[in-house]
Length: 351
Ligand code: AN7
View 1 (cartoon, rainbow, N blue to C red):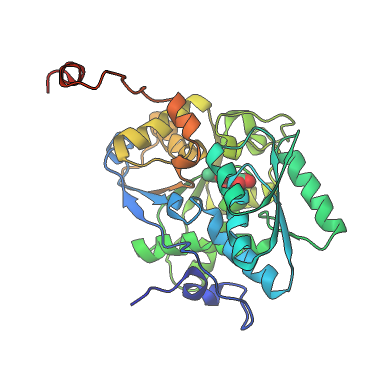
View 2: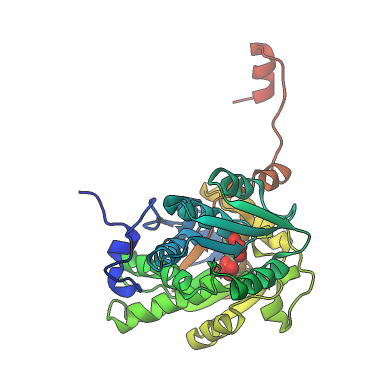
C-alpha cells in the first residue's frame, strides 16, 4: 500500500480545508537513525539523527513549504517570494513549480551554496541576487509583500511553522515518546519554533507523555540570540545559518525557556569537526549548518554534561551534497596517478 503523504498523514494537526490541494513530491517521513560512533563518544544513553536531508529538495524546508504553497494556491495566489540563504529558495522553487507559480527568490549574491543555487535555477525560479546579506534580503521581501499581492513564504508565514512541526510528530511516532533532548541548529529560528510547537501539540493530543529540552545552537559569528543583539555583519562558513537578526527570535527564546533548554554558540571549528565526523564516522553527509546540532552535543559532552541516561535526537537539517565546495575544501584530496597497475598497487600500499 502506498503510504500517505505528509498533508494527509497529519491532516488533523494542519490548517487544511476541503479545498486545500493535496500535493506531494515525497516530503517528510525521513529516517531516524541510531548513531554508530558519536553515541559512545558523547556518552549518550541513545543518540539518533533525524535525516532531513532526505526530503525531496534535500532539506527540512519542504515540510513547511508544502503547506505554505498549498495554502497560497488554495487562496488563489499566483506568486510567492522568499529571502534565503539557499534552502528556502530551493524548496519554494520546487513547490511553486508544481502549480506553475511565479517564484521570486532573493539571495545574498555569491553567498549561497552552489547546489542550492542550481536547484532554484532548474526548478525555474526568478533569482534575484542582491549585494547584501540574508537579513537585508528578508527586510526587502517583507517590504515587497506589504506593497504587492505576493505571498511571503519565509518562516514568518505561519503555514511554514505548521508544516515543519510534523518532524517532531515523526520523532514521537518512531520513538514512542518525545526524546529527552533535541539538538538543532538555529539560523532564522523558525525550525526550533516549529519543533517546539509540534512537541506541544502532540503532548496536548495525548500522543506523548513529555516534551524534550530544546537545545539550539547558533554559529559563533552569527549568534544574535546568544549575544542578545542583532549582528549587522554575520559570519560563519555554515552559510545556511549566516543570519544576524533571526525573524523568530522571541519564539526561539520561548521554546528554550518553556522547555528548560538552552541556546548556545558553536564555533566554526566545532561545526567543521562535527561535519567531518558525521561523514567519516557515521556515514552521514549533512551540510555544514546541519552539523551545528551535533557540534553542540559534542561541546556539551566535552564540558562534562552527563547524557548517559538520556535519549537524544540531533536534527541533520540538510544534505551535504548541496555544498560540494565546502566538502572538497575540508577533506583529504584525491590521489592522482597514472592508469596502470603498478602505480595503483603502490598507491594503495600494504592492504
Ligand atoms: C540546513 O534557507 O534560513 O533556524 O533561507 O538551511 O529555521 O532558520 C535556512 C536555514 C538550519 C536554520 N539548517 O533553520 C534559508 C534558511 C539548514 C538551513 C537552518 C537553515 P532556521
